[in-house]
Figure 1 (cartoon, rainbow, N blue to C red):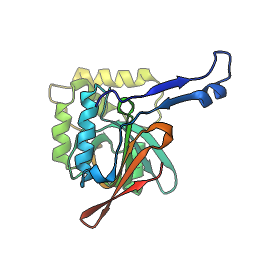
Figure 2: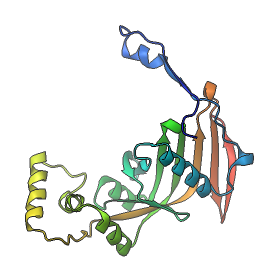
Figure 3: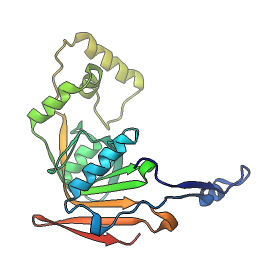
Amino acid sequence: MCCPEGRLLIMANQDQDVSGKLKRLRREYGAESLDVSSAAADPFDLFDIWFNQAIQCGTEEPNAMALATASESIPSVRTVLLKDYSREGMIFYTNYGSAKGRDLDVNPRAEALFYWPVLVRQVRVAGAVRKVSAEESDRYFKTRPAGAQIAAVVSRQSQAVESRAVLERAWQDYFARSGADIRRPDYWGGYILLPDKYEFWQGRDNRLHDRLLYTLKGAQWQICRLAP
């Protein structure tokens, strides 16, 4: 299922203000459905099906996910790339000293959101987060292009920098003196989000969307329908 029935209705003239245009920007999502009676008992199985359908439909960067973290009180969100997933959890990589890394030091929980507009689908995944092993981070780091490896070494992610020229000079200096083997810095590596909650959202007409919530209770997943 790659092209769900849908209609984009733009009922705004060029001379209307932005607010007026936004109020009239509306899409009807079609008849693709999602129901408890036919949903997988394990949310991983449903996520795997949806993720692969997003790939098959040619979704640009289907592994892009909005990752929300929070310190003691202040939430923040950014887009990162999912680099591996299994029944255990979802893995992404970053600088441990970044804003998200500092948040996770204080509050090791996060929520990820996948949005695949061509399929009119969203998936939210929430749970505890921990670092993956150094060995696993090393293995992934070696798969990155050399330029991206150097960027991970020289960038102090989320810290103020004087200019782009400073970043490019640091990259060029490291490139000039590095050999073929670039080592992963200790301050860069992977995290795994360990899901205890999944929510699957299927867009429907008239804003009567289908939402299924899976919650982990002990070793069992419980499922219920949420009102849109």
